[in-house]
Length: 131
Picture 1 (tube, rainbow, N blue to C red):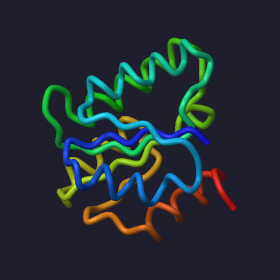
Picture 2 (picture 1 turned 135 degrees about the vertical axis):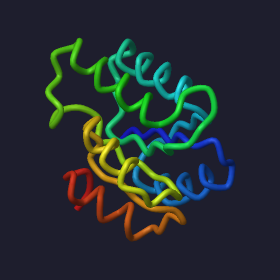
Picture 3 (picture 1 turned 60 degrees about the vertical axis):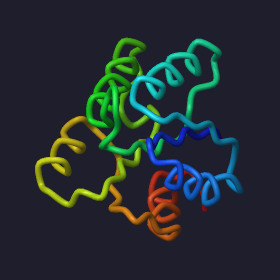
Picture 4 (picture 1 turned 120 degrees about the vertical axis):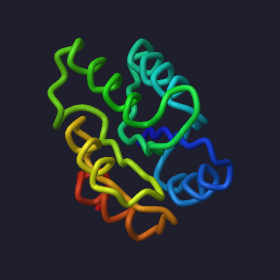
């Protein structure tokens, strides 16, 4: 499994790396612009990501905008949402605007920080990425 961890907080990225690395290869990005570029490169290389963990609040480009751009890339490639990358949004903000915005932009799951291993693994199981 190929995964991309996107978070501007070093500690959050390392925690996710520790949780996810036993299940496949993990790349890291620290903002939405890097995430979109990594997704584009992965598609160009013929090795798209299976899972993307995307923080909402980041500099340059936030997670909401990155999510919309990534789904637009998939749409241009005629990839239906269920067949695209599984995207877990993460944030410390527990407000309905961000939650609804993430699901409106077609994220697959929304997890509150602090991130717990069980929450991530439960989401991955629900996506069929692991047993």
